[in-house]
Image 1: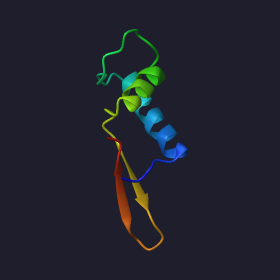
Image 2: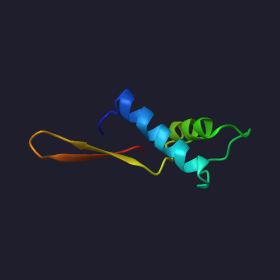
Image 3: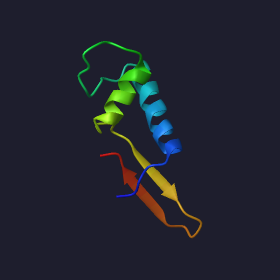
Image 4: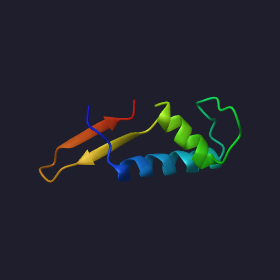
Length: 68
């Protein structure tokens, strides 16, 4: 499995935080209620974020990297 870069991690968390702020249901139970960014970080740590990264290479090859 390919390792995510820090930029990809940031993009995943921010995209999920936007979804949560617009009313998407949280996928992990948290002890305390927090901001959408905190909830997205918690989901990323538990590997339940429903997103993937598509990496496009110069030769045209596309690689899909799942979070879980």
